[in-house]
Image 1 (cartoon, rainbow, N blue to C red):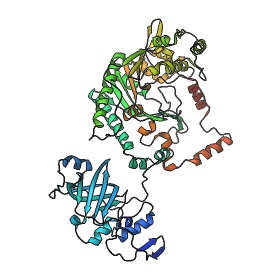
Image 2 (cartoon, helix red, strand yellow):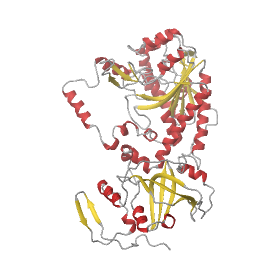
Image 3 (tube, rainbow, N blue to C red):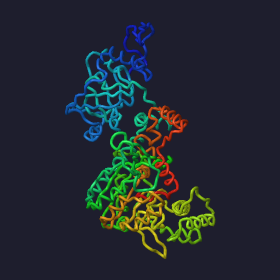
Image 4 (cartoon, rainbow, N blue to C red):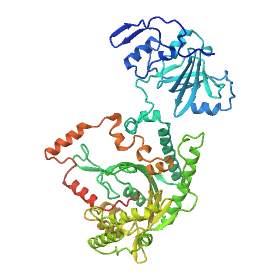
Length: 581
């Protein structure tokens, strides 16, 4: 029978306790064995002295790699068939990782749970196998604590409890000490502001990031298999481009000194220029930026996947969407299997097998409200807005601030149509006013966009349409958005000739939320979105806020010049963005 973990096994000499510059000779009784290990609140300088006293001269030694080093995942695969109570003494394996848990059974038998890249493996540190001086064994065994990164060499085997383990044949070696305690539980705010600790304490959080990585890789692979070319378009340019949304502005300090620049809100116009240039199939997976609100499904920095394919139409875009999402769903099922890297995440509840539901915007809206929409085509914007406001009153909805035809139509869709889209649903043929970059056609006497949005669970995932390639029609649609909306450089590119092209965009963050069962977009971002990024460590940049406050008191424009303010005003009065996502 093993001795109690709380019974000293040898008579120890009085302990010399060192703290900063004070040295005290302790005459107290030796601490029980389990308590001799450094605690979470041991100060860093005290920990360093204790390690040196226990023969650990280098707290951060150079790491040497050899063929015996195996990943914990590899050990699980290679030795999964070992029988209970079997130890393969002919095999020598070295593993490394962070100590997740320690169980002191006795002064000569300790169990460690070592985690590397999300996979845990038990280490059995038994003096009978390590050998050597028993006092040295005890000193080295108590030198490490939970959170330390270590390396262990030993024989693979399985305990009598059936646990696959490494039976150490030499002392456990410290690679990196943990000088700050890793908490067992964290609040939502603590998780947001200390993401590295969140990932250490919550395997669920790390699994979501792994799921995100695999989904993006899978999409990229599928695009390559269809002969698409991946590109990176400018993030910083003279204009945000591609949609009417509130951008982030900055100013060049060297090249183009003094010129106002913007972070892109969409890559759409750049990608279509490449199609004009002869790259018939292009895609980009990357970040977009919109200086707008933050909520459970919106973050100012977000990721989209967009592709543009010459000689495709709305029907082929729908086929591609159904095929791609079913393929991703199949992948996610495999990733969540018991041996998969995302096992433990909620199962997908969406049935992707049936053909996606289709709803035509105007007919369905008129059916649900019992009233026909007013005429929206070839009339002054003020008259159309007034008629749509009257329509809102008729159907019992409040008027939006700074109403425009696009804002009112979007409000009607949000209230009446989107709640019908719990199962995968294509919402098609929007009024032209909602889609100024899309080709249009006349249906039942109305001009509608050759466009669809895919909704799942009432949330938009995909936006796609046949691109407007007539420069004269595109100019008219730009002018519908108001003064200053015409992009002459893009119209010049269209005049060179854009082939019939289908454009498609998907919100990567929302897709990962759906497959991970996450309620907040922050949960699927590496650092929890803007709130987490600006407050890592719990530190808020108060100095910047004070500076801006002081500038405003002096009458200095903090957000930029007059031209920028006029653009922001136009954005606030503009319709919702119709860009690809």
